[in-house]
Length: 379
Image (cartoon, rainbow, N blue to C red; front, top):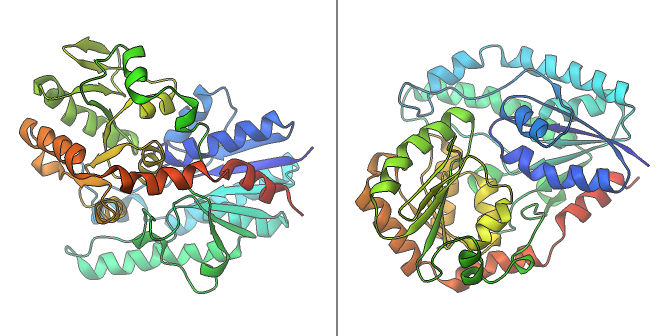
């Protein structure tokens, strides 16, 4: 049996949640697994009963209103080169001490560099190849810092294998952030969303709503906060009062400590089976993170996306989803009871089932977990 080291980006929960099925399948097959990460992903893996080795963190900065701030990002990462060097050395030590036969890096340049230092082959999983920053404020400084950040993505070309956890063109979600160098574009393999379950594993949507205690004749909307902890808390606090005041749909929202049920609105801290939640929901209202959007589309969910203000990746994702006619964009500054209800109604009325089927059909016909493990463990 092999020893596999997983090095996972810890910004938000998307990277960790898509590595989860690969890690558990590897363990199920008898392989030994080690995990290194930082930030939100540490608690996520620990709640799953998995041991984690913590490494120095990297994140973007926010202003007082919660929007991405170039100044705060630069200040937060003023020692970025040193952080990457420190991460690389720590990863190299972990790889050597664990006796790893293979390295899986989910958006961690340091892990790819460490795999080269130790001579252990790496499989890189990405949905964001490059970083784009807003340049309408401090354009020269933003462009300069963007170049610094993207200089580290040269490491992507040093990986032994490159897998893209996104739908293939023209269905691609992270279109702008997946513009690759010529050396990487031909070797990149689009494996789609990395799922543990598929819609066929659950009863039809109407019956599942009824099973969960909802009226099958009324649209069910899942409101799912995503992203780093401060962004999840902000989204939760913005959405909660709106859900209590609307009367047009049933709703369930995750991320609410203590939880409550009131007039067709169910607030929960954690939904154990996220795929069951997607299978039951007609519409998903969330930020514009790639991982959850990809999962929701695999389950034929219409999307209302509220991108984090000035977070270029999310704004780009939202644009791609809208262009492919599977999402309605609702800007954070426009959030109100009326606009939320109108956006949900538009999603139900304007997003056609045929557009959703393009995504769910692809997801139903690939087996990314098996494919990734096959590549990880191949000579």
